[in-house]
Image 1 (cartoon, helix red, strand yellow):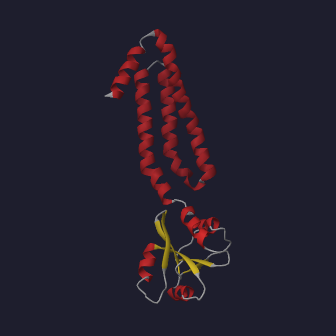
Image 2 (image 1 turned 120 degrees about the vertical axis):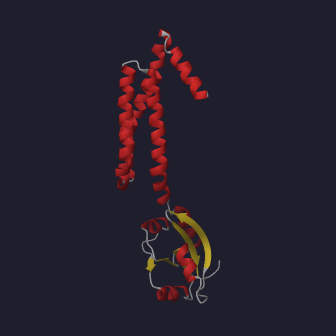
Image 3 (image 1 turned 180 degrees about the vertical axis):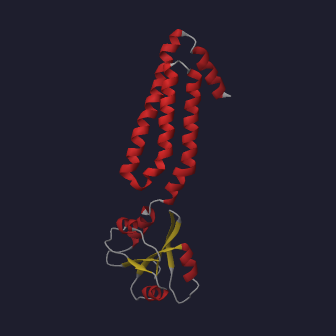
Length: 207
């Protein structure tokens, strides 16, 4: 209702010559913003996340097509098609973001939070390992040059049964499997969802 009222008022006032001169300014501003985003958006993605540059193609096509259409409609004083083009671009970009961008962001959620928790507990000389997966993000956020990656159950058993206090990043699905064995000392210190994995930070000794 509010949108319909706004469009009606905007279109009605556009018939007035005085308003028509002023009314084109926001139209050109919207066109300019869409044009600038067409250039800045893929450049920003390429510099920060080059592996996802292909995913920006639908957004760029949408923004570029919308910019061209809006400019032509303004040039020929077609205000109604212009407004509908703006609404279409916003709607299409929103749906693309929901379908493509948000899942990508969720899939690559940073490991920083759980690593910060781990870093506040682990002393520099204490051992840290990862079981059955590896990501260099964990090295970076824990300020370590090396993290042991364990794949075999026997190696994990030996690691956790150490007399020293040791720490481990493990996926929740693997934790559920190995926690069935009572001879393994496991104490959960932190948990977080990192991308498509639910990660646990555990130790062989309680804090």
